[in-house]
Length: 317
Image 1 (cartoon, helix red, strand yellow):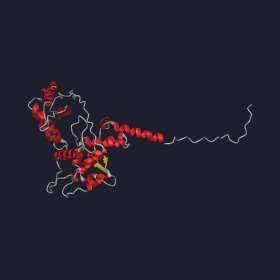
Image 2 (cartoon, rainbow, N blue to C red):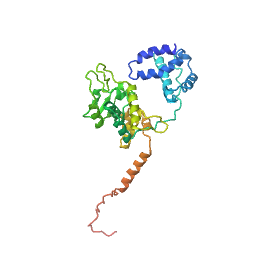
Image 3 (cartoon, rainbow, N blue to C red):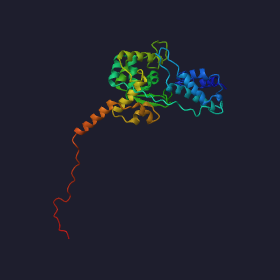
Image 4 (tube, rainbow, N blue to C red):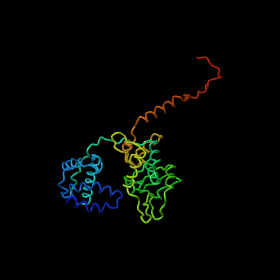
C-alpha cells in the first residue's frame, strides 16, 4: 500500500474532526514527497531527506522566510500518526516511523503583548475584532476556539465560556473565565438568527463562521496600525501570542499555575510553564511586592498570660 492509498481512507475517517483542515494542510507536502512510496519501505533516513528538502522552502511573499523545524516536525508527526492509524486498522503490519524523533527546536517565542500593548490593539479594532482579540487575550482561547465560538457556550451569570470537547485541541471539554469587557464586546456583535456562531459570515444567507485567513489578515493589519512589535527574533506578532499574554497576565495577577493550566487546556504544567516566561517586569513586580512587605509592621505574637501571677511562692524543699 502506498502512502497516497493509505491517505484516502484516513481522510474519510478524519473528515469530521474539527482540526482536519489543518491536518490535511500539514500532510499535503508530505504526500507530494512520499505519496508514491510504499508505506513499509519508508525509513527514518528518508524523513531526514524530507527535512532537508523542506528547509529550502520559502513562503510566497515572505521576504526569504523559510520553514522552521517546528513546522516540519508537525508535518512528519502527522505522517507517523497516519501510519499508527493504519496499524490499528490492520492496513499496515507495523509503523515504520515508530522510532522517529522530532528535530530539536531551540527557539521559543518570547512575544507576549502587555496590557498596554493590548490596549493599543483594541483601539484599532472594529466591533468584530475587539470581541475576538479579547477572547484570546483575556480568556486564553486559541484562534479557532474563538473563531468557532457559539452563542450558547457563554454563561454571563457565571462569567464562563464552556468549550465542548469537539471544539478543543485536546478533545476535552474545558471552561474559561470571561471578563466583563469581553461580555460587553460580544453583546455588540450582530446576532444572525440562522447561525449559531458568534463570528458568522456577514452574508445573512451564509450560516458558516468567518475563515481563519480572514482573522489572520485583519489581525496583521491591526498590529501594523497599532505599532506593536514582536520580541527580537520572533518576526511578527501572531494571534497565538495573545494566548501567551493571557497566561502571563493571569500569573502576574496571582493566579496559581495549575489553574492557568486548566484554563488553557494544557495536558501538563510543563507546557504551561513555557507560556510563563519571566521578564524584567516580573522582577520589578517581585521587588515591589517585597518592598511592600518590608514596609508593613511586623506582626508580634500575643503575649502568653502568666498563669503563676498572684500566687505565693513556696520555698523549695
